[in-house]
Amino acid sequence: MSEYTTISLRKEFVADVEAYIEDEPFGSVKEFVKHVVVQEMESDDGVSEAEAKQIAQKLRDLGYME
Image (tube, rainbow, N blue to C red; front, side):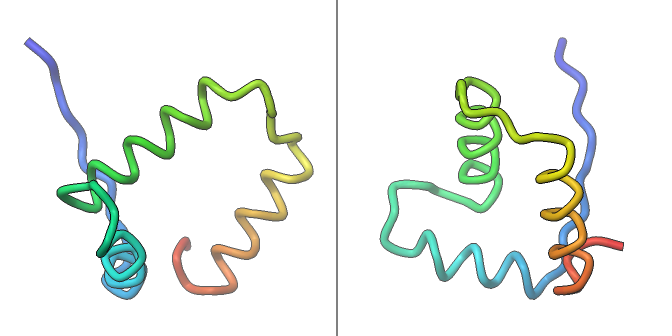
């Protein structure tokens, strides 16, 4: 049996994603996020540690991460 965990996202972010995927073939934000994460994990284009830090800081600045 699989175990699950919960990831909290700001409501504003979820609303932005919902608007973004409105005309896409995803049934939910959860499906879209899973797709993007799996796609990134399978990609040969890795994100450097410096890039990851920059992305994290941008998300914090936008209020999506604490």
